[in-house]
Image (cartoon, rainbow, N blue to C red; front, side, top):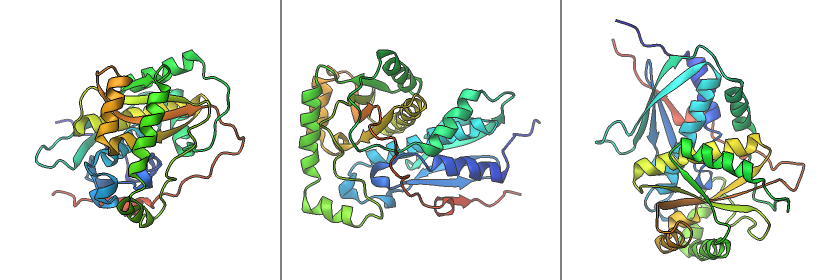
Length: 296
């Protein structure tokens, strides 16, 4: 019987450290990695974000999806193909993925470049340049989303509708309960980034609206943000719509024409400042990783 290959412990730690640079709602980092002898298991840790901030768990699953894609890129750059089984155990809805491995014969320079981008990418909440993003770049970003089963729709004709929905959804964040929960977070994101500049606004959507779709859109989010950063663009995910059903339905009708389910909004554009924002702090890997006993 052929023995299943697996990367070394140091390689796994290196890859997962990069995976933990993925963006997450309110920087909650809701992933939990369990390391078996020849696999890595990804679990959702719902304790990382109060229920009032994410009632359905949507934003946290999306965050884990982004970390999963980051992990795939990191392992690929280190010479390993990640074989992912998503939602492997229906009896454990928090068990989001099981990752096994096979060695790569060749590592494409593009994958190494994306891994480098993943380690340095920032969420840019400041104003963007007025320079327009070329259509061919937006086409590349749409293709990146589609590769991960997401749909990226630019809200050009319906920009005002989208901005109004973001504003309305933002009002939900002004409640006392929401603000109290935000105050308890270690490093909360600003309530609302700059919205009045010339940034491209796009809706990242999925065909379904279950946990599998939320996980997929997180992977698509990561793919789009890394492709954008590779091309010199900056981005800012906005998860406001996921918190208010009425506004999500409004965007589904007005921007998507009733087809698909909007999961989050992306601001994309060229950086206005040569100095990037500081890297957002992350937990040390040991806080989100656990070694499982080796089976004898």
